[in-house]
Length: 620
Image (cartoon, rainbow, N blue to C red; front, side, top):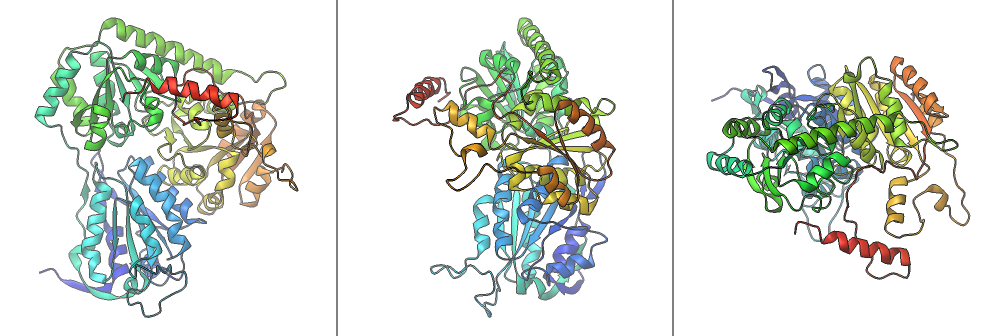
């Protein structure tokens, strides 16, 4: 029987986290947890707070300014580490805990690990109702933390201290499972946090985590090979799973051996170098004309590590004519939309597929067409990002992206661009040139406004050697900007480029495209009867949070400011006014946004007719 030591539940939990190691893909043993983000309150400061303080030399604790934002940062850390490492977050029992719900949903959608440790009400119920306690008149055991149940992959509430011995390993198993990976929650009643028990010493010396790479089933592999062999015009869709399994080399080898072009989802961008001859670029609603044209003519789509979301598939109308073969570690994703499933790790699956296919290749004319279209698109990207705005016009995203990327001429591989919502994801998906996996960090599974700056902080903690460039619209900046102060406090320098188009420009254009009138999106359209069109000085605001900040007048000013930002020692915010109307017209695909069946507006009726016509192209 293992020796025991008498410690509190919180001490056992924290010491386990501090001792835990993971064996990375290259064989190194690293701490699995990169730290714990915490905002203390009465529900966690005395319990888990004391335990974190005692272990701060082995397990760093970072104080943030917003619970949702600190969870975003923790999630971004895991994404930047390709899910090989993670972080934890702890909050008090009330609004701090419910502030985690949005972030947990984001992690759930994106299949990213994070350990949520919110405080909870007293297990003893002696002081009920305690400060911030949510009381339900029909469920005596319910607390605010139950709101997290639908958005986490594993939930447990520890009602006795020794329950940590089973609950924590189960939570970690989910976080590190390639198919189940996602957020987990251990709700910690504040009295249980402080109660002592006889903890086995073995629990405080956990075995290293060794991440699994499941190979394909022999029968599924044989059927997949058979489906590929009869294809003449295949396309690979590379999703986030390619990056998480670090399958870039396997993908490149597969495509070069068999002449199969690659199109990238938002999560999969960077799977193949942007200038590879067979990289068609972005796919789908925000896709390149090269990728979308080839997808529309393909007879088979090999979907590797992708959820096949509506933005990737053009709401399942873009390649509805093609047969699907889903290579995915998650069976639900592998078999989506009538596809033939090949359940396996992306790297292992691609390698075994390639070996079993032998000398099979796609039709040579198909491969040649893909290379020609990819080359044409690369030239077009250079033209779009190198152009100047028309005389008298504000710049738009492509011109800003070009200026930002051109400033890295000496070390482009050090840059990581971070973004999440609005028009920027579409423009970056098409136009950002990514030479290495991880250089493009986009949260577009949940498209969560406010992720950008907090996510940039998490990326910087994961990759301190990188130049982390956050590109964010004014709308997202206003939603969540507090972690600028955290980045300054932690010495985690970011470059934040704020594109101010005076409102929610993306949804303004969608509203107009659906036949709607200008309403409630651009700031100029939102002023109330007694209100005014406000002037917001983003640079002054960023300076008030401790950053270096400046407002530039044009693209030339942005180019000069980027050089100053790269040379800066702390977070540098650059603000530039941009157009809410102009976008890159090249590429794109239909996206299903329901249009009213009945309307007095002729524009809405016309949009409805177009909507019905496009729906006829959907797979089902």
